[in-house]
Length: 388
Image (cartoon, rainbow, N blue to C red; front, side, top):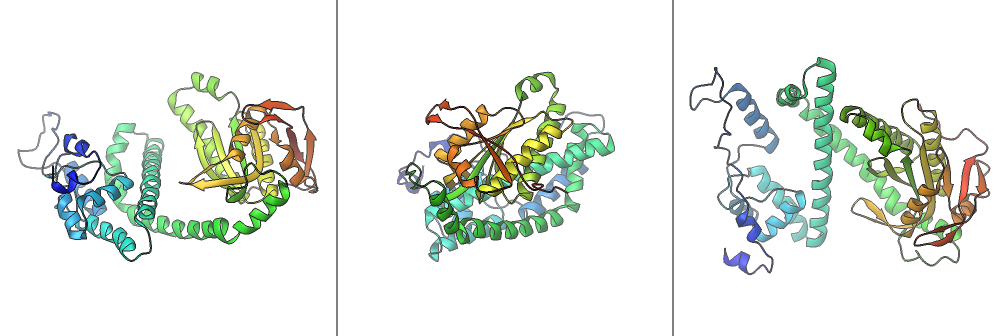
């Protein structure tokens, strides 16, 4: 172990105990066939894989981790912190795993810290957000492309995954352009939502929850909603994997569309449940009613239970936290299929809006909140959200 690692204060043995990944010069053992290429000659498939990798990584893997760190002018320990934040696997000292683009990217992140634009902690957090989101994104994209080839070409899944290597090069530039475009749009929307309009939301929260101090220290006011598919567990037991995947995808796609049209944000999907937020009680109510109606009318999906609570939240790591979120989750379990429940304070915030009808329900004792007074939300005047 180097002196540098010994002084880090971290347990770094895991890096040296990990099985090194093969270098680019090592070829995986190929299955024996009657048409095996001569020794030292790569198959066309392997050539295509290496060409795709070189394009995606910006060149051939020629650098070891210490060379990259030294080239960026930083200790190996600091470099490894950022690589781990990006979700990279551990590499040994002798693994030839990096390219010049890796060195340039590391320097870009470090320059933000050196210039005082980000603290080290903030740089790691921002880097982790990029790593986690892009990891999920590429898995989603690859599976979508494979599924499309299977469906359109009538080929087996395994064949489609091999053909993906030859199909991707024609898509990379377009996907990259759309990614950057979307990031700019989403960043602008996020600035408006989380900074420019945040103060107005806090003032509305104070008015809607006068005298409620439990969640006062939390910085953002939002309408927090949950939509939960009814009988999902029993359905999943009767379906094969492909049918279940199509059901979940249909559910998430429909939720994402409705939430987006309503001006909200889909925070996350967990199996048969989505968590979403909106900037005002009215926007949250419109989205909630549209979700309940959409799944009641859907010919394939079951109905869903929906809840919505207006209050303060803490937004971190792309997720949201706080008593408001917990209360919304509890209300979902109390809602009847095809209905929307809100709490009494959210109902008070919506009480003067003619677009909504509020029907008090019997009191319930809810774990962590004691006795609460649910209110069923229904459509009043107006058409609600209009979906194309």
